[in-house]
Image 1 (cartoon, rainbow over the protein chains, first blue to last red):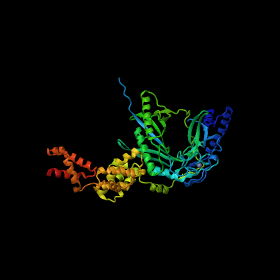
Image 2: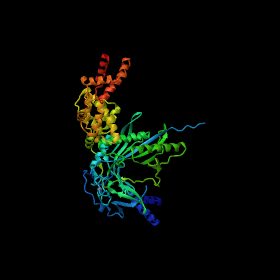
Image 3: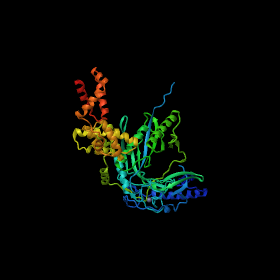
Image 4: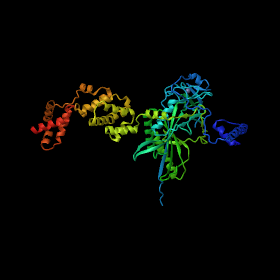
Length: 95
Length: 493
Ligand SMILES: [Zn+2]
């Protein structure tokens, strides 16, 4: 199943990635190969099986509502390229 | 030939987001109290969206959502799960929001609103659970425009309540919001304060020719920060769409933001492509099986809700629907009334009489002072039993209605008991004939004209004389006794 160039660009835009023409062509092939793999999964007979959203047999893993200490503000800002007055500072994006 | 303007029907649906009253965040143990905390101090690797962390569902948040759903008469399916809603914005640390897509915690409920035409049910499509985003503050400086990110709010439990497109006017939308806020507060699940941002509302608005059953093109309206702005924004939007349709133009399906300062909605056109959230099941959170025993336990934990309480107030206290509705506006107000009545220990008709009088004070003088001074019932200095005592003193004839007003104002200011104030001010009613006789005689002696009028057959002159006595006694005289005495002296004189 071949993804079109436009579909790759759409996916890139959703992920906020700027791609060169070469990269678009390369990803077209790679993403298509991933989809082909899912096509193969579709050939498995699932007749009579309930749909599953998770692959592990766990249910109701909950925690009690108790607050725990958080990181220090310094640690939180440690990875931020820019910060100001305790805030992480990013370029303004208007939606 | 004249053209007749089309009669349009307004169709409004609302999406409300309410923060839940939990102590910790939705999927991590950070404190959920973000508003007063310095920026980025309630943050951990989970709510910061670091790779490799393991979120765990907050049990209380699930319970509060189910309680809300039950209060809205929703069904609670046995299976529920969380999903990832993918999009990129600086307020979203992980690049996705954990929300619920096809298996929400609840669906198919309703909320009853009281419109001018009577009660109406507004359908509730679903109530689901998700997480709040980080808070952005936009700043423009000489070096460009920036957003300052505070991650404290990221991951705070957020409940989304989606209504059916059942509202037919901006006023009905406002009534729905007021009622929903009341229910959330009664259930104790959220502070539900719009101005503080823990209760937010987006609206879908469309018009269709009256009688048509198909839906018109809908516009999503955002950025409304108060009940008033919701109503204004929706009124503006209805008018804008009416004008477009009447002019033969089409309404564009889009998102519009309400600009409070300009009193209008503006297109938020920057989205070039429709949102494509690519929902998929959250692999880090195992699904939930909501067992029926939990649902019954949560149902039992729900307090009496506003509609039930209103009906009980009407029946138990003989109040009108309108009075009962005002009294049950908040749990605290209703509790105040009940405490004032209960303190009397009265039964039967005497209890009804007391309940009515307490309601009159609460909805009259007290409400007036509360509004003027912006005081919540919780902060009123008069204790419920003190208000009950004041009513009892009027009923028992110890003070006049007129004095009671003055006593009430002092109770409001000083929070002291009415007995204390009456004793101190010498406001006790003068009912004794002997005490009053001298004053009445002096008034008669000083009012030749009124006395002459009375003797000439103008009986209303007595009212003037009663007024004079009341003035002399600073309102403390028992008006009935004064009247009897006046008539006795005038007839004998
Ligand atoms: Zn955290």
